Amino acid sequence: MRSDTKRASTVNHLEEFFANHPDFKYQPAHAATDEFYRMCRVLRVDGRSFDETRVLVEFRDALVQEFNRIYGTDEKDLGLWQRLCDTLRIYVPDTLDACRKVCCRSFLSHKNSLIYKSKGGLDNALEPS
Image (cartoon, rainbow, N blue to C red; front, top):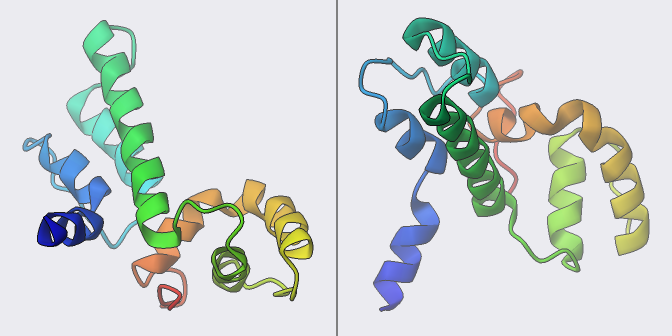
């Protein structure tokens, strides 16, 4: 049971999503949303049919799951918020409230880069430890 939990936490949800579209060659070194839009162009997905809308929903789910895998889901975890600040290369406050404020301000303009940076993109920034 414990090994299943560990295995589940190491699944890269974005790679899993793109693997479900074998006619598209996913390039994980690029930002996930850029790859999604490229996939839509390559596969001619415009979101007008039910199946195409489902693809968008599945991508959003994979993006959220990958974010949660990397950064966690405990909104009261100071370390999580500090890792977000560090990844965004912004001031890292010492309190939960202050972290939330600076993170949320910055997050809106950086949400795509959080996962991209965790994979070594954008000046080879590394996933926070």
